[in-house]
Length: 303
Length: 239
Image (tube, rainbow over all chains, first blue to last red):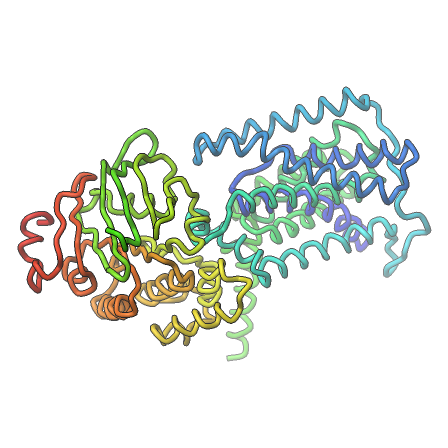
């Protein structure tokens, strides 16, 4: 069981990073970037192709992450800003970001072909045993980076002026701009940060998935499901959603069958949306409700 | 007017393709408090949003202390030209009172001493805000939230202060507190443009009033001409 849990957490950390990529963008701009999965793919493909051509792995990894980061900014200027300039309340970005994602995917297939390419190995060495459960260094690194990212993001959001301005924009963009916040600059930063997060997710999952122009779609969908499970309003909650999804997916694979991960996430998200539509970690969500009941019962037990 | 802090010339503005205000011309002199009165839907808020750069489409010209801000986006207008207390307060409810105030001083972020001075001046005007400085702004009463909203505007230290219906939804005692605070700001020599529906409040705070109806200025008077309660004005225009 511990093995399933830890493997699930490692898988979920990837989903969580992708979900955070969505959430950071949504947090600041109220836009969902449906090209997020393809940005992950871009990071994997660029890293793979550069390392195949002899570029040092560290440099290739940096280039991969830089590509997805820059890609996020390109998506904003190509698919979001023109739409919102035309009509601030338009939802046309639903289609335009999806369109840019499909174009990125097709472009990658044309440039690098549709065959899977081997991603460079990041961490070699033996598995690590934790209370009898075996984890690779790659999985430990993935969980560590996910936790570091979510903690770092929360500290940055709540303790720095930049983060607080982001919170203000999230809460009321009109008034935030009336106090001096350049909302467009923050939107650019949010799209870049979203791209950075999925770029990191890409280089972490690359060694397990190979490099293929079409792999963005499945990670994009899983990340979106994680976003819905955790809650779209808080980037940290979306990481929680990713971890839950990862553990449940591995549980389904282990105890139902090997194909269960294809459909099980959708069952989970449907149940979550029925029970707690804002996500399990959001205000009034299931986890908070359970915690509150637990605290109430403790107080009652003491009295 | 040579010492005009705000000069609006034949301004038309609105939402989408429709103009809400038509050919408005008005001014606020340095150190003057001016009220913009009018019934619901007259276009008062649209005037303030236009000055603040929150409405893009418009004709005419807006100058603040000689600077043309007509085409400026809001975040540039907020660099000291003007600051706004919006209708309904619109605090950042996910942040503390002090965070809301400090965000108002965003343009002074490289000058911590100035920010501290401004914070002290807000706490001097509203001691209750200092007591609640670490509380979430969502936990405050309507009157307290309005004080924070005015404090947030003060933190910008703008040339022109814009207030949109600050009395809206407040209890009578809170309105009295807020009126006293606005009178103090005026006595400090601040230039104020106040949008209000309460004529009594406007008369206590302001030197001059404009009356707006159906998006057009239909009258302008000094408050001294209107008596203590402004009854004639209410009967004539605001019913």
